[in-house]
Length: 379
Image 1 (cartoon, helix red, strand yellow):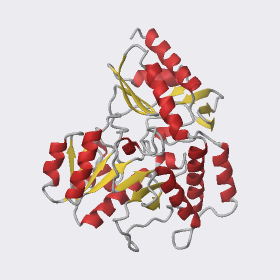
Image 2: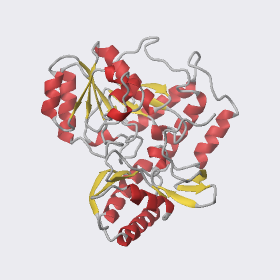
Image 3: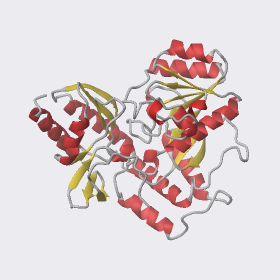
Image 4: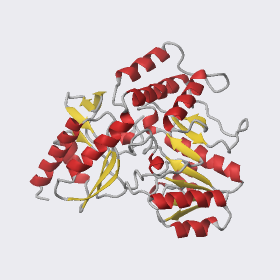
């Protein structure tokens, strides 16, 4: 059997990693400024993280949600306290797409309606309803296109108002900072008006914090820059620092019932151990504050470089936009400078999603490498 060939891969094979450094099979060291699509939050192989997982696997790794698991309760309490959502409820699953599936399903159950409002350039996952609310026709099969979804321009509150007044919308799903779409953001005015409209029209407001959450923006959740409280918040990626886990934070007015949602693997013992370790490191090492301060330092340094058209994002979720497509630039960075970076649907944008543990020295390393490449190309 061979692998189903769906990934265009760089010719690099990591075999070891620590903090922001990746070592390939040839012993070459790389600076990781992408964190595997923003998954690595507390750094590769953090000693507290690896210790907690090793300890847990010697006890019990998994049992289904047919029995008590006090680690889930502890995770809910710690996440609520650290994020500021201690009155919310937590449902655990395994991935970002699964989190958004459950968020959308719950919104439909709660309102009795079926249509969803999403936004241009949105990315919410690759499964069923999650891919249906993703603005990419290439990854939407005919099966997915049966979903009732309306895409609107970001920050167009009049368009949202017109659609919500039709009365058949169950949810509005929105990324506080678009990831794959290219780092565009809703304005504070738009976010606050959107929240009011959703409440007035019995529509569930879902904030997709899968990439922007867990401190990456310089606050625990990126929507907290705008003074709003969504009805449902989806999380994954940095939640487990590489261990598969996701979840949704659910407002108290949305009531559960037995069988409403479910999962076999979600919230298992190993996943909870990983997620608890992540929260402990984020808190003890002040990584939310580090994301804010290093993010500011990064933007200050990067603005000195030639050829950069625009800097987007917040904290350590940053996009650098050029006048040309960045595919070749990314190749030079990984093969010549040994630095991992990311792309997006905007082919002219370089996406930066480093571990939240990154420091100024590593930022300087990237800025110098990028500067040398740009000078070499005479940008």
